Image (cartoon, rainbow, N blue to C red; front, side, top):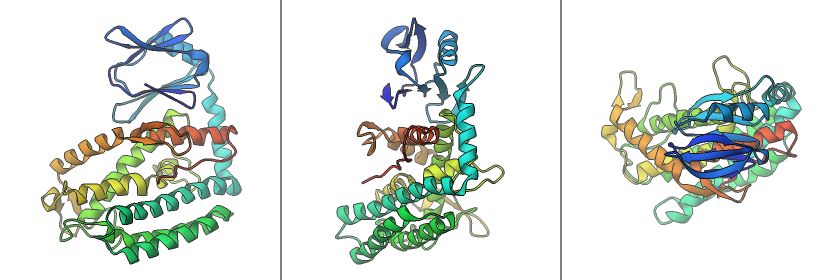
Length: 343
């Protein structure tokens, strides 16, 4: 159980929530573990299968406290709402901002800033940890290009300009990415990003990790009452969770890409974990997906100090905290959306 931004996170699978007077009570095996006054909470997010009592659901709906349920793996399941909900006003504000190019750009440029910042520090982390095993000159050059893009991004006022700067950063990063692969170079190398389908083992791992991260981000956005299909950087497209793609941009380099590099460099994945199809498509085997998912869940439990909150939390809660911060900005509680800046 963790308490951030007036939101109670229930991260254990066997916690049952109930109501006692004006308090939400966390129970395990019918024994009380903790209690929190309802008036101090704006939302409750439970990753437990045990659920919550109808009385607590009713109290949360009456007091307009968001109560959302996700699976232990982070898949959004349901949200409790009463006759009226603040989510309506939040979503209407989200739609207005998405329709306003200037407002969209303010959010998008912070997202892109976070992405480029985290991309640079992923490269710097490799230089620091493996300086004698990598092409330091190539990595240093890419890092300098990314550093030089941060100031222009923070001042850009058009979405087209942001996409151009993001593209320049991606080009520099992708040129350096192959140098960050330290093991099994005969199997794993990176020349260019390929998708739908991926055409090599490294891209197959990236695509799978991005799918998982996008799902986590969509669940996080739905849990705080935002519409995951209406984005600010990625524009509307039927069936595409555009806001989830926005939210995951800053987390790609520091979570997904670093995770894939760790699997490869620690020799967790090898050539036998892939299926090579006619036409060039490369896919993970069923056993490899199970190995990947187990490691992914373990990574999500690793602690990290959130750079904006200054508090420790599991990696798996980062999308949910960022979704909360984005919702607060849209409501007007924050002056700007604070991206996740990893180092």
